[in-house]
Length: 331
Figure 1 (tube, rainbow, N blue to C red):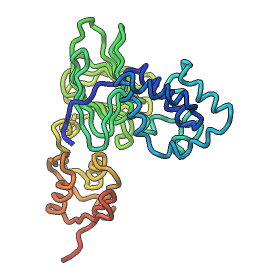
Figure 2 (cartoon, one colour; figure 1 turned 120 degrees about the horizontal axis):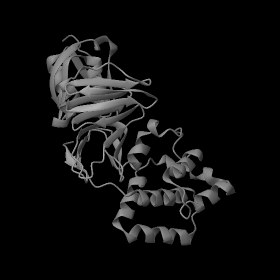
Figure 3 (cartoon, rainbow, N blue to C red; figure 1 turned 90 degrees about the horizontal axis):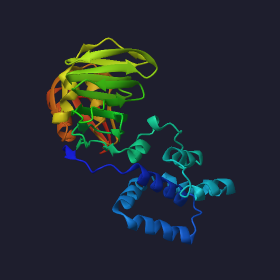
């Protein structure tokens, strides 16, 4: 999908109300009066309905497990959630504790669809979006990414829940610092453009600085290190590892390309899989083939065709969502 301007984030208060209502609705014990109250709440404001629809996109396994809320105490918690100050984390914890999240453990960093549903800004598989914040800072979100943004009188805070974001900072009139955090790192840009990726493929947080400087520190503590433009550094296991020369391929996705520079085919397929729904695999027999080139992210089928044209491989499609790259057969 091409890069588009995304919709504005849902206010935290509205999110909290929506989650509380959703918890009650999924409990299976909503009264007729509460159902009317919910409909009135949804119709009272477009933001209410948008928040509700965001939650309604959660997998159908939720509704199939609503009978797990049979316990009277659990029903009482669910009923009271929209009247109390139960925050969204506690409400989701209620859902997970009742088994309503399809067996997922209560670890939001391991549950991307929960994070996406709750995040201020998020992208689906294969989607890339651009956002301009109130202070003029620009964000580009890559596929399967989610961030929260909080502006306070003291600071401008960005939390990268998962995925990848490219940021062009803007000067704040009130001189508030811009701070970005992940599960591994605290990053403090010093007037700059930089890229941050957090997923299992990079094994921690990968910071790439393209302009200016970024001060990086591990969440567990330790010494802060300043990463200069043209360099990248990985933050993992409580350490900011030694900077390495930055790779232009790290940020090529902003312009719509997946760039390979003498890249293993197995690693290339793993990267391409981030942009495609379903399963995309590479046969180990050809995983060490090297390739170079710039491939258009908006046409995944074209990329697979390019691989077949340029390498001794063939693409096997069991279904449109189960694809394997195999060694080419002799003709």
